[in-house]
Length: 344
Image 1 (cartoon, rainbow, N blue to C red):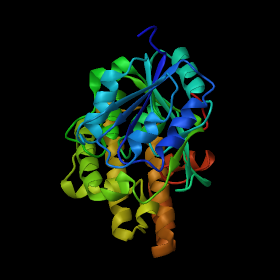
Image 2: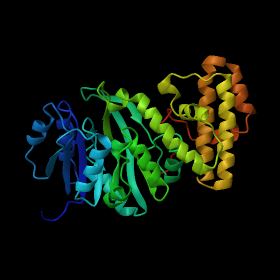
Image 3: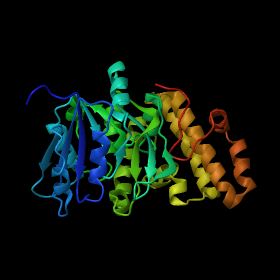
Image 4: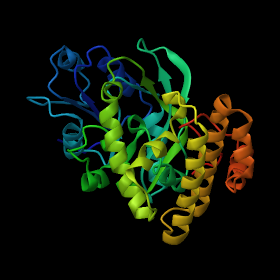
């Protein structure tokens, strides 16, 4: 088969005839050219495969599952068949910026202690028109690691990773949702993970997205992932702590306004996380303090519309205000999209 490519761009697809061409063309327009595009059709019943086959570039490889295997099994198959030293993920309804591959491979070639690197993501509408919304992610490995305790702090559509490491860890087949989140958590225990502080992919917002169709299943898997991290951290918790813990990072998405009871729970909970880490040293204490300060500040800010001045009174009376002050200086960014100003 000749010399293997440096990068495998892996695009799995299921019934994406409306979008798969856009994804493929965004890779064919890359400034870095030593790659293959590995397309795996997961048993589509529409014209997805016909569109794949309409491209004649020799760097394309098409594999078709005889039946729908689902996301984790198809992703594991892509990792198995990838020929590149690096593997770049792209969802079949998204689009890459022209310099995405060049910038990410340059970073990984210069930082051998990183297992993978993602990027920020600009959202687009169903027709592919750019939106103002940008999904920012933490940059430094210690911040990525600690944010994984609260949410998935890397966008899978933006990931470039070392192929051998992904083969070693793999996706869990019993995770039809959040299998990427689970994999990131496992990798972060042994390797550095980071994000480049610029948009290198467009993420498409549309009604057929898997995440919107399986929201409850996603929540169940997130709770399972968080349980393991809390246990490793050494913090005492009950099942009733899991949902409010996850809410700390998605108040805006859930249109959630904290009441006084939630504020009191949040203060106690965040202090317990800091105390547990002082004993186990699972996370960088500085990074955890920054994350906790951001969660505490956001909780109190969001509660203002519901309980008014009481929210600010709780904020300033809490010892957590000291960790929150760091985030004020660094300019707090939108929920689930904050990032410190340093580059990896």
